Length: 240
Image (tube, rainbow, N blue to C red; front, side):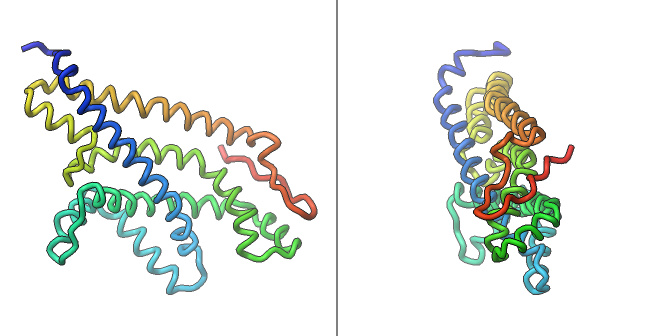
């Protein structure tokens, strides 16, 4: 038996590419959902009202204190015992989104707290409502501060989608497991699977590195906040 059998790659190449497409699609869906849902969770953790803050704290600490693989298994295999049955892809999306929402909310929270207090005071001097001040002043600056971290979470999520194989989602890793079990070409299939992961994650890592460089440089003139009244203080640079 050849250690590297390229004929197996030709035979199962389409299946591997389909698995890769599922992995990329799952990554994009989850990162968008978690990116949006992380904001209200972060705001809830910063709320002064205790009954809003405590449930958000409990949710984040529970997610951070339990393994992602256990969360996926619970959603797919345990919930049917109480009458909640989900398709594999749906269960994977819910589990990954719940997990990454908790972690990304912490990133947003740190970014919001990093915005200088003077920015809020400047918004108050312009008679902006709290909601408008958050949307136009705080959130853009916080997002720019945490953008490199969010990019790193995107790469981590792309690799963590491999855990969706435990709920039978036919993403790249699950497809590779099936093909290697059928063909007994473990070296070839897992090598190609690793190369496919690398072919996507490495360019993404270069893109994230470029974002970090742009963030440190201040994004140029476009990084300044536009306001209909007096010019607000310049956006704080990304900490190094």
